[in-house]
Length: 226
Image 1 (tube, rainbow, N blue to C red):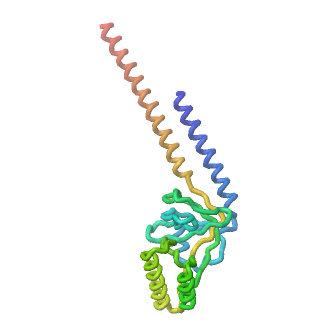
Image 2: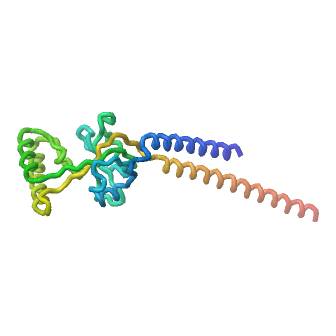
Image 3: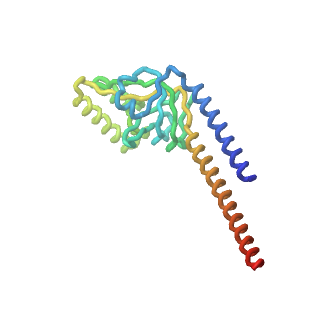
């Protein structure tokens, strides 16, 4: 009985914890903000450009150089969207990889045409960095020969995408995050349900054991009578 009470108390504590996190989420995410999944955004990027959104996904990569970019995916692990942090957030920690997150921010668009690529080549030659190089979990900050070759390959890939585009340009999209939080409540509820199930099974086993003892004593009493 005591264990059952303790189990109920533990579950109540988890429910309060989750309620607090839900309140925090509501404070973070305004009612007027569109709440979407990664898959919904990727299916129609233009519909969300320059709009405030709350996007939910799983972190599959965090840039190891400064933590200035993380990528989150939806149902398809091959499709991810880039998230950049606000000054308030600062950086994304590498430990976020594998976490389910809720991100509030604005979807931004960068249109890349031949003039942009020519200017980008000049910036790279001067040692400058560009956000365009860090798309789709790629890009490097190193200046090794291998890194320079990787950047050249990315430039070639950009030109190929431009040539294949009907508009003479293609777009990169990312979310400028103002706030984010790790989504944990579902996991905690599962743990609470597991605790409750274990306590219930334990109490049921004790009850069956008590019944068997009672039957055994009853049989002994009948034998003694005979």
